[in-house]
Length: 476
Image (cartoon, rainbow, N blue to C red):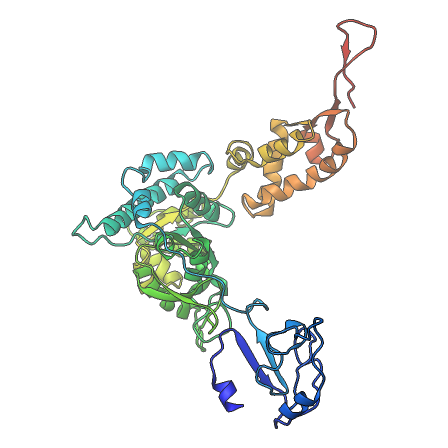
């Protein structure tokens, strides 16, 4: 048995089910397919009749196993099962992919990288408002991929630093959507991670390197392509240092410290095609020096930190301003400084590796109305396209759109609340309209949104038989 188990058979697992190996007459059900292992001794085999087979007495398999089973009686050892990991789907299947270096250089050639003003124009088609943020991000991304171009072509002797971005803005203002749109326009892989799930190595939760593993998966296991991608870490403010903490903060400050090497640029060994490291998964080395890291968060109470600093700066002397001046300031986040972020709880080393700070404003009622109807993939356009497939025209009155925006503001979830509000009113319409083929148009009115009436349903026009050029409409 030692000689057998000491051998190397790829993809096979040996399980010994008996402590002693003894010759037995028959072992049934020894194979995974239900076939029998022939465990008779040599003398017993000679005394037996010829095996069942064809008329000439040939056996079904070369080794005398039943039905040509290649495993039956290979070693003549009872109680051993052979399991093929490949057949069970347990073997490694994902492989690292190598991209064409020339194609990668062409993609990030200076002529193919959108200029900042062009990039902002493309973002304007999908993202409403946030002009200052789009301008900052467009310049930062353009400079970052110029840096990537210089690194791929070795055309610049000057080492250009990374331009990682820290995005600060209230929930629902478009941080994640802005990054998703940016990655789609640039045609680069994007990985989105939630900072709240990250923990220090050795503790329950996702390791910090898992964000790089997600990027590799988004790049179809192409390491070279992943090394030019974008990683967006959301809810980064949840990693702030906890005040008056007496225990080790494994999901806060420790994660900030663990991210420092990734932000700066280092080689990370990550599993290919899997979420965690194990012996059966091949590993790949990914260099993060050309990966653009964008961290975003709502940073609640950061406005109080900013106001406290501004009050100290302007509360001395005869020209001192009133203390409540900054309480009504709507764009208070735009006055944030590095010191404010440190005071909030982010460690200096982390803030130093995020040189670009981008602030986003909270969405107003007018901005929400524009979001409903102006972008290429606006929510109104999506529902209009859905009903158009049923040959029904969908129309929203302007007053109805404004009322929807008001209700979304009340939810305090930003643009995320728009779809929830519209879905509430469109549910019955999407259910009832396909029932009646005579319906030609649905008009959403303010009274319907207010709950004081119903939508206007207009029936299709039809020609009255026997009367020339006579058409009529049925209006419900």
